[in-house]
Length: 353
Image 1 (cartoon, rainbow, N blue to C red):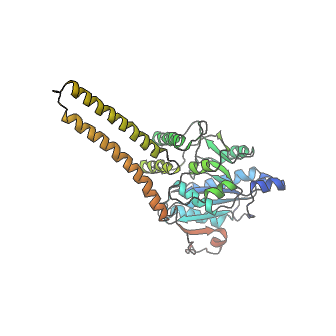
Image 2: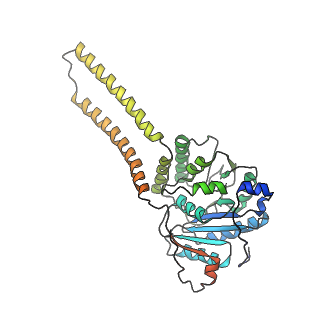
Image 3: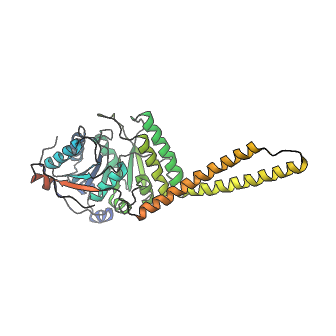
């Protein structure tokens, strides 16, 4: 357990290359731990304190926690616990969102407020366990830009595992993720990756897509996946579908598929028409069936409507992007210096997003 009011020396972030020139060690780099929080009032303190203890055991003295409350629908219990952590520890910063933005956009909010040379993302439920952090940090010391931890044995539900599998296949096909690259929500990135990623302002965030746009110097290592201590996953079927659809914003392959299907069915229709004409010439008495014609019309109408919907999805996202729909809306930011002078739990000054 770490003592409350422990002092935290904050310094400006440096790039990896500047640190190499200066001969500094990773232990002297600022580490930012970003945790999106959703109905986690019963677990988040344990996550923060165990992670801080793990960092201290690794002789890492400079770190910050950026905790993002993704508008938890629990009557303010999660936000109250996050504010209590900000009061107790000088290295905790709390970002309160004005509406639910989803896990990836909540992480983006944390990245925008983080100052670290190395940035670490983990969950709020103890499944991405602090004890596994040392393996990710040891791997990134080998010179990688991004390191993912992945789980040989997952503790998710069958539904969640199926969603992860669909996401894996989709990302691999649409944005060319390497076959042997395995990912999770537990990762470490370098500062320059963060600096590029936060330039993306669309609300349709998919972090794997952004990371693969930035660098291919990526590693993944097996780590242990722990059981969820409290509650259940916040990912519903709707949220998994929405996350899956976000991947389309990083590839034009679906549009090319529509083009290829158009070519295929056009050729098929021409061949069908030629066959019908030949059969009619050989057998003038042959009747051309009305039912078969209607089936063909319905089939091709369905194909047309499917791909018109796909194109409409792209156009709609372009429209919303031009309208500057935000990724997230920050309502307030709580820091130790603010909460220290605000013991009556009065609302702090609102942060403009």
